[in-house]
Every structure is written in C-alpha cells, then in structure tokens.
Amino acid sequence: MQLKPVPTFDSLSPEVFKKEYYEPGQPVVIKNLAKEWPAYDKWNWDYFKQLVGDKKVPLYNNVKSDAYTPINTADDYKTFGEYIDMIKAGPAAWRIFLFNIFDHAPQLINDFKWPEHYMKGFIKKYPMLFTGGQGSITHMHFDIDLSHILHTQFSGRKRVLMFPFKEQHKLYRKPYEVLSLADFSKYYEQNGSPDYEKFPALKLAEGFDFILEPGDTLFMPAGYWHHMEYLDSGFAMSLRALQPTFAGKLKGMWSLIGMRNIDTLMKKTAPQWWYKRKEKKVYENAARVLANLG
Image 1 (cartoon, rainbow, N blue to C red):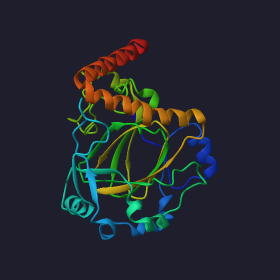
Image 2 (cartoon, rainbow, N blue to C red):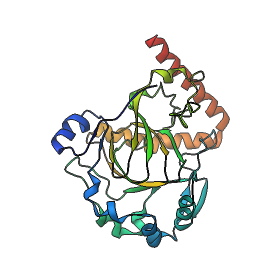
Image 3 (cartoon, one colour):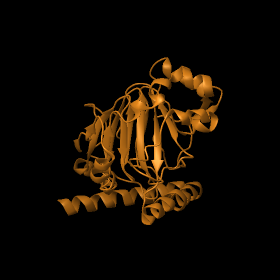
Image 4 (cartoon, rainbow, N blue to C red):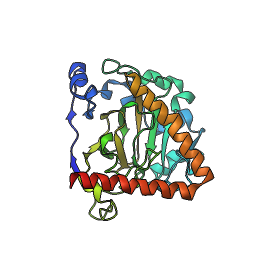
C-alpha cells in the first residue's frame, strides 16, 4: 500500500475548508474544532453510564462477515453499563457503532454545536456514538449512505487507514456490499495483514495512515474507505451530512435501500452461490486493474 499522513491543522477557516477539502472531497483532521464544545470536558464513561447504563446495546466482535452474515448483524448484546465495565477493565475487542445515545439522553445534544459554518445538510436526527475496547477493529468499508462525515474522537486513540472510493477494486470490494474481501487487521505491524500474495492489487492502493487523538475531528468525504483499530478503549461521535448534489443523494439512496436489500435477500436464499459469484467478480476486477497498470 502507498500511504501518507492525512493533512492536519489546529484550526481551519470555513473558507479554506470548503475550497481545499470539502469541495474536492479530500480528508483533513482539525485538532481544535471540538475542544470548544462542553462535551470535550464533560463526556466520559462514568457520565454515560449514569445516563444510559441500563440500555441494551448491540456489540460487534473482530470477526469479518461471511457468506451468511447480513450487514450490521450484532454478535452479542449487553447493557451499556455492563459494556463500559468490560472495556474499562482492560483490552476487550468489542465495539458498538450506530448507537443513537441521543434518543435515550436528548440533553447531550446541548453539549456540542453542529458545525454548519463548514458544511450544510447535517442529518440532525442521527448523531451517532461509536465506542470500542482496546484491540477492537472496524474492518475496511465505506459508509453505505455515502454521507460526508465529521468524526470526533473524544476518548482514547484510534489508528485509521483510509482510501478514496476510486480505489475500490484495488481494495477488493465485494459487489453489492460496502466491505473489502481483504483483512487489514494490524496492518501497521510487521506480521499484520494484508496478504499481498492473495491480494496483490493492494500494493497499488493509495491512501492515508494516521492516528486520531482525543479532540481530533476527521472530515471523511462521502464514499471514503476506512479501517479503524482502537489503540485504547475510547469513544467518538459522527455527524453526518448529505451530499449537496441530487446525484450524490441518489447514489446514497440506492446503496442504502436497493443494494443492501438485494444482498440481504441473496444471502438468505443462496448464500454460498452468491458469495462465490461475488468472490469471482472481486478477483476479476482486481486483475483488470493490475493489467491496466502493468
């Protein structure tokens, strides 16, 4: 893989952000955007446990999905309080994503500001909390609704691997899914993934490798591939904004409703045939990229 650090600034004017990052669809990290929010000092595990500790939440482990797994299928359930106790005790490779904590504790909305001076179109009904124990992994994917994301890390550190959408065939994207066939676990370690013999096109993929620190806000443009590993137990919040163009919104709608429903149906009716068909297509697409660049 051909990787570089993501551009990072302490602060960024809205004019520069829009011209150099939002409009061309380039990622950037702004270190101080969230540090003015009450949430930066106020939010912690004990506070969340006090507010929503009794709520049952879906948990996800590090096992990659297989032929039978519908998208976003939980691996276990616990109360949020039980989950917090577990990940505070030490490494625990369990994570929660797409948890709308604000439905259960709406007062949290007052602890941050929607950064509409940077971009419009925020889906204000769905700010989302993402949490993970040390060692938990979010496998390589792109967000199915194709929204722009402002992802703020509040606690703990995450190592992030990101690629623009156009790298999809070098990343061995599975058709009708938002996932890569390749495993990138511990990619930054000497004996980590990926397997370049099995996935040779990965060597050509151009992307970003960096660490999100507490307080950092990442702008992730629509369709960007990302793989995240929790170096510490921690939590982050994503604010999603629809693409401003009709074409962008239409693509997001197709992915969310059409593509996902087709894949779920086929996984239920002919899982092995469907998986083998998609796997064959994955390698054909990668071979075509290698031939064109060879």
